[in-house]
Length: 183
Image 1 (cartoon, helix red, strand yellow):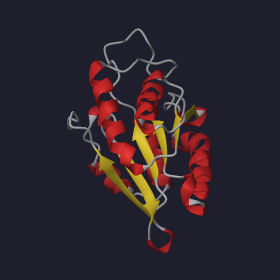
Image 2: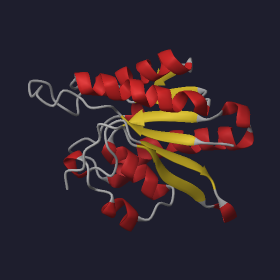
Image 3: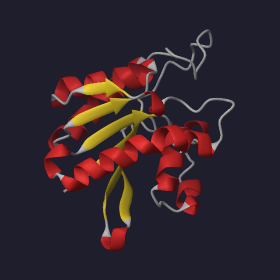
Image 4: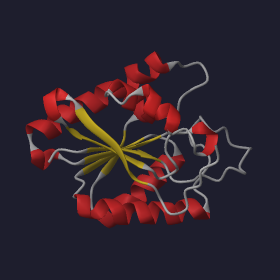
C-alpha cells in the first residue's frame, strides 16, 4: 500500500543558543535525539521505506542519515522542507513544501514500488501539510501537547495513506518512548 511518512526531526540540542534555530545549519541533535533517531530507524525499517527527503537543517539531515543507515533507503535534501521562517505564513510554507508532497503522492499511488517515502522536516511545516492533506485543524489543535506546542514529538511520525472516497487516512503512528507531553 502507498504510504507517505511525515517525520519531525529528533531532539536537537536546545542549549545551543549561539546557533539560530531556523537558519542552516541550526542546532545539532542532542544525545537524546541520537537515541530517538535510532528508535525511529527501527520503526521505519519494516515499513520498506524506499526514499528519504530532508530539510537542509542539521537536525533533520542527521535524523535522515541515521534512518538511511538502518533502512538502506537513499536520502536527499529538499529545500522546500526547511524550517518555518519568521517572515512566513502558512500559505508561503505550503507553496514551497506542498508541491514535493503532491509529486511524491502521485508517484507512490501510481506505482507501489515507488514508496513508501519519508519526509524529514519540522513541526510547523508538518502541521501545515497535514492541514492541506485534510486532517481536521481541531485534531491538530488537540494534539499540541509537545514541546513548543507541536502536534508531534521530536522523531514523531505521521502516516498518510489512501483512504475511502479520495480522502487520506492520516494518523500519528510513532511516538518515541522519550516523548514528553508538556501542555
